[in-house]
Amino acid sequence: MTRGDEELRLLLVDGDNLLHRLRGSRDEGGLAWLLPRLRASLPSGCAAIVMLDGHPDPGQASRSRVAPGVEIHHSGRIDGDGAILELLNDRSFPDRAMTAVITDDRSLADRARRIGGVTRRLDWLRDRLDRPLAPRPGGPPRPPVALGHGRPPLPSGRAPGTDDDRTPWRPGRGATCKRGNPKRGPSAGPRRRPGAAE
Image (tube, rainbow, N blue to C red; front, side):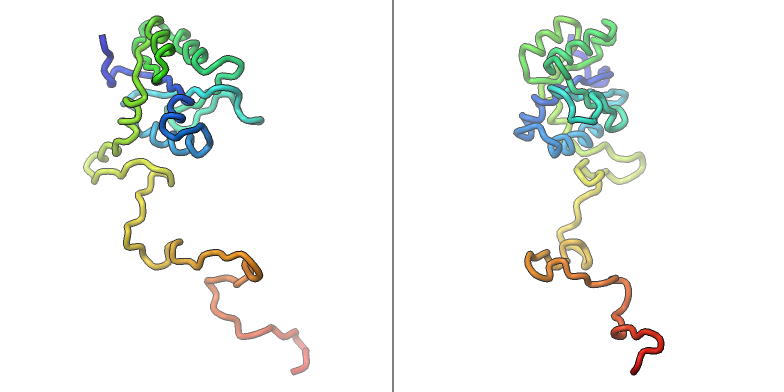
């Protein structure tokens, strides 16, 4: 029996498997690319845990909520596959049937199904990540989620005054020359101290 997407309540994402497949490596840029898209692509009423191998950076928690319904977990002393299976096994049997392990690792998928979970391939999630957001009720369609807090890209005919119209930075003498407050007009010349000779 195959569970429909609308019945899923939790996605356990093999984060290293996904990021290596989509981005070539696991790094901060890859996570920054993934997380807003993942949040926007979740089925209604569903949450996601992205499992990463190993320990977090010093000073960071091994589990953190990064967006509504999305958490990042680090597997710590065990491998990511084992940590995903522990999370799945800790759920009640009916809840496991509404939990999908997202991976292309055949061994992990087989083990997840044996203990009552369902599985989805990375292509299933990638297709969801590439979809534009559903339209707002009574409003125009929303743009696809991207970095920059979901703002749409600037149109090709940029308005004057945008960042691309600035003079590019050049190294060398004068590169960090102070130019004063751009909102104030030019000064009338050097200031004279009161009582100074003309």
